[in-house]
Image (tube, rainbow, N blue to C red; front, side, top):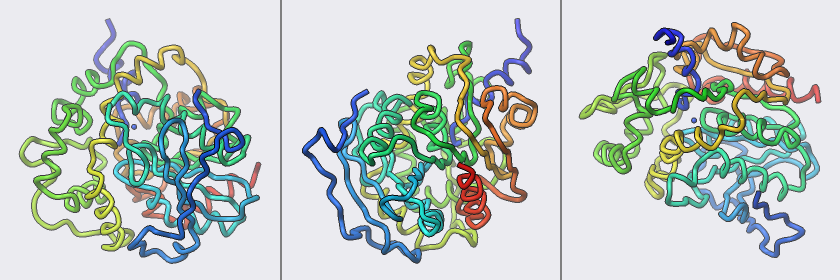
Length: 363
């Protein structure tokens, strides 16, 4: 039998997701995207008026995308995490488009203005990667650059694993590759490692965490998550999951930013985004054929030293001890930013933008 320590190391990244074939091509489908003249209200960041908002029918659902930059520029897909939207890239979109990139930031399925299938089983890696492959086809591209954070990074790793032929290079923020461990189902392993109040465990029962969010209010929940900066595991004790009292904002997150997120989530709720967590075990079952597979696209990885994913059990050993490079042989660089938390691209946008642009200019 393995020791408890070795078992913990084995499940380290499979357990972290904070912190987690049918293609319709333009030439063969009569339904064209509807281009809106910037209908998104209350967008406070400068240069937002240069963003076009479109809806495309892809992989059986309507996907909302925000797009900016020259139509003939190299395409960069920006994939957001939880509990965010395309808007989390508000600092990257103008910077990348100014450098000649065609920047495309979707609301992933279940988020924002994209469709929200009801069943949790519609949120495995396969469906979301399928959306992205359909989007790449719809954009008329063979390959794209990818920048991704949190759950977006999880999906980007699987896009690069399943379809490396569609990815030129990738910048992953916060979440390193998580090789599948065939011995442990994620939820049971998380419960054994962190207990019943670990946030991903608490997210499993349909409706339970949504009810608690409703009690404290959408804005309070978003403030709690978006300002979370503790490198320790996120524990949500029953009855006091999200604290009480006002939550001040850091300098990099404005009241207008929170207002935008709040306005969207008050319309849509949180069930669909949380379903990504509820599909973890199902996704683990489906990805059995990919056990021990390598990701073979060029990658740069950025993480904050206060990020809870970076400080999870065994993460630093994996990232710096050779495991990461073994599983991602084209990993070119690992950058750990000091005194930076989980939302790295919002907290340090200028530095992150420079890393992205410098890396992509190599290709």
